Amino acid sequence: MGDVLAGIHATWEFDTDSVLIRFERGIRTPRLFQSLRERRIPYAALSSVTLTPGKRGTVVLHAVPRPGADPLLEAAAGQIKESCDPYRLVLPAGSETLADYYATELRALLGDEASLPAERFLVSAPEAPMHFKAYDGRAGFDGRLVSFRWFWTGASSAKWKAGDQSFPVAELGGIEWRSPEAFEGYLRLLPRGAAAESGEDCPGQDPAQGAVLPVRRVQPDQDPAAVVFGLGYGPVHESLPFAAAVLETVRRTQSVPVVTAAVPVGGARRDPADIAERIRHLGDLHQAGLVTDAEYSAKKAELLAEL
Image (cartoon, rainbow, N blue to C red; front, side, top):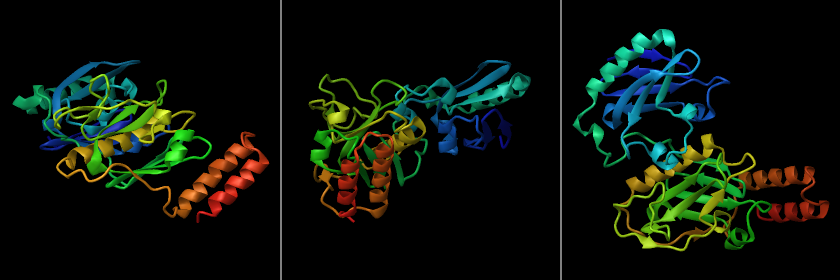
């Protein structure tokens, strides 16, 4: 189509085989949109297109993706709020005629497979490297390894005893993300061939990848393969793109043989930037009165000794 449709918080640029969604970076724009910046959505990834009345004199053009086409939505597992749905373009009511034209054009481009689940991801995930601060540790992903480095004051004794963790994506079967806006939010990494003890599919799990093996579920705050959200740590706009990037890489590398289990990295020499971050975190707790002077001095000396 080669045209541009500008809405509130985003602009859709229509190409011959896809639509490029560019998100604004204004103060009122949802932070998830600002984090995503832009996304190219192939028409082959869409199942339907709707145009409905919105709130306060607006209309909403909604391009509905096929199940399994977008790693971001697969990781979210239905937990994205309507106002943060990246496939919704909100426009002033005066643009309804123009929006209806594009909705009709988009529907004409949908193929015979639009009603079927996608066999693979058709939309690109956010790119690594990525990182974010959870409540009990820092999560990092470099495109090959997922790492969890625990915060001394936030991690449970079980995680602290297990040590910092590093997980090759070739050994993972999926992820489980629970929104920090819900009760007990977390990001859990699932080993290949593993599922919940109940036998239910977990978000981010691919049931088609061989036999499903039962595993004993552990509470996220006790599981070294999970980081916990809360108190402003692990917000949606940071943890969800991270989860989507890991999930997309896991699916793409499913043919890589499994070598070993999760590798503890607690004994390795630490990154100076990571040490500085943990000292800053410790200082914040000290200023808030949650850590005594003696505890602060002892732990700071311990962290400096790891450099």
